[in-house]
Image (cartoon, rainbow, N blue to C red; front, side):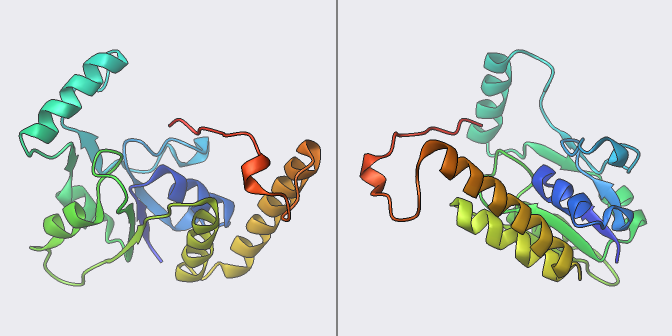
Length: 180
């Protein structure tokens, strides 16, 4: 299988599921783990991503208001990589190349179409479910299940540290914000 990942989390999972050798291309944002940095990059931002956060936010908002894409996909390079599977997301048009945008760009693709695998988790449980779905899609379900068992062990340890179990009333817990 030949995989191109346009989503950093998916890239990390591919590697954690012991399938890094199948990763033939990546997005400009997929830079971890270090051993995948030699893979060809098939996307780039259409705005200056080197400024401070306010300048980047202004540039992104301007592109969005004008209805322009935030990402360029190098279709020639992508085609040359001959992927069987392209990993993306359908949660945020700003975060990475979306499924809709990718499918529009692949509309004129001639020959064998790669499968587009899109993720859209909303909760931690859905994140873990998507990891299993990805493991199944790349025929690494055993590796995915082992990785998720390790995550569950870590989560259980965290719950034990703060004195929380699955029967704890959620209203009695502190509010937590996760800021990306």
